[in-house]
Structure formats: structure tokens, C-alpha cells
Amino acid sequence: MTFAAPYLLFTLLAVPVAAIGYLLLERRRTARASAWSTRAMMPNIVRRPSERLRYVPAALMLIGLTFLLVGFARPQRVLNSVKSGATVVLAFDVSGSMASSDVHPTRIMAARNGAIQFLNTLPSKYQVAVVTFADKVNLVVAPTTNRSRVIAGLPTQITPLGGTAIGDAIDGSLAVAVRAVGKSHPGNPHPPAAILLISDGSQTAQGTKPQDAAAKARLAGIPVDTISVGTANGQVTQQQKLQGGQVKTQTYPVPVDPTTLQVVSHLTGGQFFKAFSAQQLSQVYRNLGTHTSKAKSKRELSALATGIALVFILSGVVLSALWFRRFA
Image (cartoon, one colour):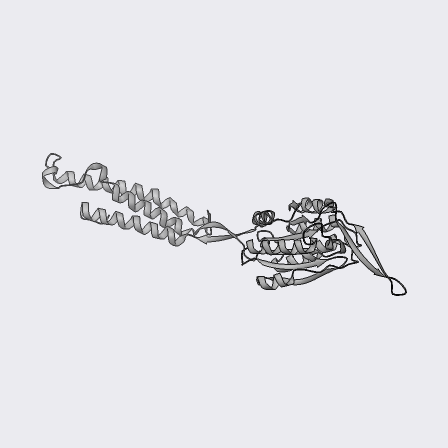
């Protein structure tokens, strides 16, 4: 608890002064009463409460005075509240290797189907964006709470001859997330945000190095969770037109390579997942909760302190009136 006007706490010195004054007044009253009667006659003259109850009304009033003076100093309670506006950026690898059918029906479709399951577990108030990348990065769906729009933007096609620019994908996704939640400032962190990057390999295109992009994400306080899609037996078949109209068909091995994804998730404080399942996707959502940011706010308690003070003071006044036929 803090105080907006702590210097006014010095007024609490009035409480012991009031207590001493009350004791001196009581002694004076006792002395005056003794001058007009003997101690033996007092029980026959006045019916009084027991000696133990004699100081109860005064004690209640002093407690009330203490709360009243504390209220003058404007007590405040510091509250932590979770910031709203959480955003998840789904980044999909749509390079040629994602057409491999080693994961049913294909890697890209498995990623899409898993993302739909993930969206079903995500609270409706969370914003979701969709980014695709091969050798270039594209923002397909800007952050929105419209789940239908997000699902419609999930990829179904791949870029046959495209490479994999993981570093650029992280940079692009990070820019989308920062625009959605803002930048953090001392005492005012941004709402929770996370990047969920789905790929089957390592960096094969020119551009930003994944480690450098991961360092930027860590500095921004946005974790990158990564999911590796595929197996060691993956392969794709591509057709290439030759001169004279002939078509050349060739099959290439595309084994999954999770090393880069593991490094990225580790550097950013995210988690790496080897498979795409509903259970693991729910874990991604739970992890997002650990990255929530809290905003500090102050709630003034002056009214509460004043209310408590009035309760004690009125209680003391009522008891004094009932027991002693006086208000002090």
C-alpha cells in the first residue's frame, strides 16, 4: 500500500494526544464526582457499566479517528491486471518441400488442419494474423478476431521452386505482432503476443539469419514457438519444362530438419514441438498465457478508510449515549 499524500500521516500524532486528553478528562470527572459523594454511596446513586467497558466507546472513537486521518493521506493499493489485446501470428512455410506427403495428406495441409484445431482452442478475444513465407514473406491476414477470415486465409498451396527464408519470416511476423500490441515501455509492458512458426526445414534462402531475427524477437519480448512438420523420409516430385516442350519429372528427398527451429524457439523463450497435434497445440496456447504482461494501476482507498472511520466513531457515540447518557 502507498499514500498519495504521505506527509499527512503526521496528523496521526493527534491520536495519542486525544487519548491522553481523554484520560485526563476522566480523572477530572472522577474527582468532581468524589467531591459530592462517598465511594460507598455511588452504587446506590447510579447504575454504571463495569469498569472494563468504561473505555470501550472512547477506544472505538480513537480507532475511527485513526482511520479518518489515514484517509486524509489518500492510501492507494497497487493492482496488477492482465492487459487485453493478445495477438498470435501464425507463420506458415509454403516452400516446395511442404508438398511432401510423408505427413497425411501433405505437410502444408497437415499444418493447415492443425492450425484450425488451434484456433478452436484460442479465446475469441485473441487476435490472430496469418503470414506465409518461402523465399519471400507475405501478410495474408492482418491481426483480427474474425476466425472465419483467418481460416479462409490459411494456406493450401505451396511455392514449388521457393526456398525457405526463416529469418525473414520471423522479422515479418515480429513486425506484425509489434504493430498489433505496441512496444513495451518501463512500467507499461505490451499485451501478450506470440509467433507460432510452422516449417519443415532450415534456412535455404538469402536474407536475415534466423538467429539474428530471434534476437530481435527476444528483445521485443515476443516468444517464437516453432513446430516441425515432416519426417526423415519426405520427398517431393517436381516437373520442369524443357526446350522443345518436353517435361522433366524429378523426385527430390526433403527430410525434415528441425535444428534451426529448435534454436529459434530456445533463443526467444518459446517452445519447440516435433509434431503437429491438437494436444501440443493446446500446450502452445497455455505457453502463451505464461507470456502475458501485466499493467500496474493504483486504486485509491480514501473512501474505504473514511467509511470504516465513520462506523467506529458512530459505534462509540451510540454506546456512550446508551451507557453514560453522553456522547463523549
